Image 1 (cartoon, protein in one colour):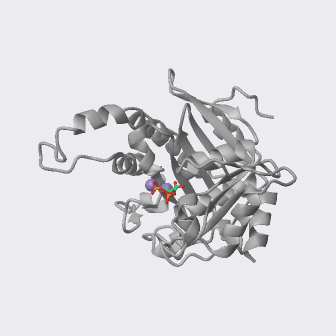
Image 2 (cartoon, rainbow, N blue to C red):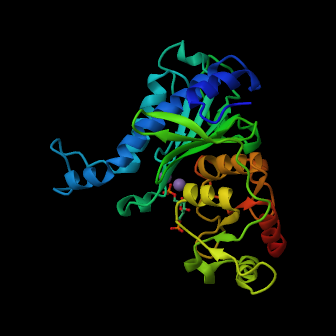
Length: 332
Ligand code: AHG
Ligand code: MN
Ligand code: MN
């Protein structure tokens, strides 16, 4: 039993043997993500200052565009993972194509690919509201020793070996799973160390919070409209409370702790919804299921879906099991 004041570094070592594959490579990779999280945290915390520095104009002295924080987070994450020589490929929301890391033979030996949303909730950056980073890790399908291909990234969520998020909120937390429950670590910024603060996180079976962008209400399918009306109805333990930050990581994190459902349905404006299957929905679905919750596209388990494109979008309903089941009932 892990003690509550365990550091993330200690936790990774202690739990290395419980991974399905125990070469130590996945532990090293989680360690690299831990480091990247601290680097990005440092940047996010300076956001106000960066904005002040950037206010002089849109271009820097070399005539390059001033970096936006999501691009900066993307660069820092990719840089950290590349420098550590720990993955064979990276896909990111901010990159059109996947990145193959194959500059020398030794790096070809790496077995894992990472998919990231480097900065989630980026519309909240300018207004000092919580943002996050989401990551998803798979073992490659193609043989070790060859360059990665698209097929290594287009795997169903059920193949994930680890997934998690970092939330840059009132405190910075790293929350992740390797298939043995979900654990949350809080950063002590004074010493730059993550401590296990939320062991074995679980969604309450049901909850009282629904999170959806209700501005899109008139464009939602009838089943979604009916479910929202159900949430608002004065009956039993309802009406529920509406809470929507507009940052999936933050909305998910709150709902996991308090009990609730997050929804990004398809609409007449966005046929497949908005969220991306590979680096938003699948990692959150893996965390949800590992925490007794549920994630669905309205009909099917998110993690069963066979991806066809890197930046594919999918409708997303995720959270407390009973609430997601109820929403599915309305959509049938
Ligand atoms: P990103 O900042 O990575 O593009 O993701 C934003 C996502 C998600 O975090 C959030 O829940 C949703 O978009 C908000 O979208 P709306 O503004 O359409 O509600
Ligand atoms: Mn996002
Ligand atoms: Mn993003």
